[in-house]
Length: 358
Ligand code: ADP
Image 1 (cartoon, rainbow, N blue to C red):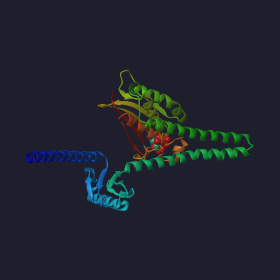
Image 2 (cartoon, rainbow, N blue to C red; image 1 turned 120 degrees about the horizontal axis):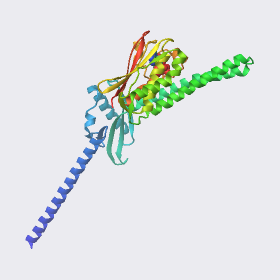
Image 3 (cartoon, rainbow, N blue to C red; image 1 turned 45 degrees about the horizontal axis):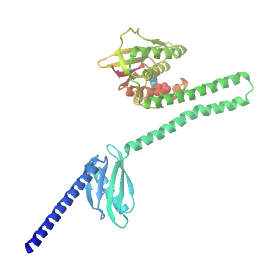
Image 4 (cartoon, rainbow, N blue to C red; image 1 turned 135 degrees about the horizontal axis):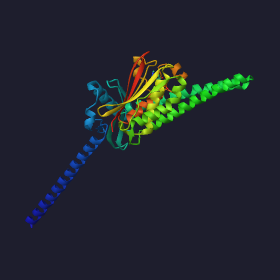
């Protein structure tokens, strides 16, 4: 009888031990899963208990870019947000690190559990530098577009007011011509913006494109402007079997047109603009060379920015929008290529649209 009871107790103890082992195994698996989960989060993550002591953190939270000083600042911010929230409410602190590289981090503490039974706090460190940079670019862009459009629209308003009070037919005609010119300017700007946004969208058609054909189409389009300004366009005769690239013919023509228009606009009457196609090793260059006003070295870096002009007055005179080279650069990037420039003030410029050969 006694023996039987002892055996039962032993069996019970064995069962409990097995249960405990199973629970321990489950808890270990759970902890491992949680650890893996926070490692998979693409931010620094720090978990604190209800007393604010760090109990878990992922590798990213140890590897703060920018050296020990930056790491110490982040650590301090984590402590501060945890203390400020005290397991009750979410708290965010923005941290500006001067770098290099300069960065903006958002450190957010979110309480876990209930108000009366806190499970601690989870802190996320999010690098928002790129987001903030893009926001600033967008704000600048909107401000620039508004400013650029206000000029012709303002001019049209003033000219129309003057026209309304004018009785001399000659003056009226002149005023009407100027209103038309300003309207065309606003129209060109809007067309340029639409082109740019389409090209910036990134999606391009990928077809075999004959580069000589692109050049011929572009030369034809710019021919009228060149005639008007007394500039000769020189193209070497293109035979069959020229180099090809893979890409979007429409975009490529648009890029070469922009380069040619600039070469013509920034040249004096009587001079020549040369355009040729040069096949290199693994790449094809469309080279546009002028002997015009040239570009100061200090401006070479910036001429590809939207709305950047070396000489605003000349650009305005020639009907420029400041968007042409931004379009060229985007087309080059969309095709995996680049645009290069060499220039000397007073002597002329050479632009090279370099594209990977098909
Ligand atoms: P824009 O419409 O003003 O020509 P772009 O983006 O095409 O705008 O060019 C930006 C600026 O770069 C121009 O305003 C001009 O100052 C300069 N630039 C571009 N191409 C040439 C060139 N071939 N010769 C001299 N300056 C040029």
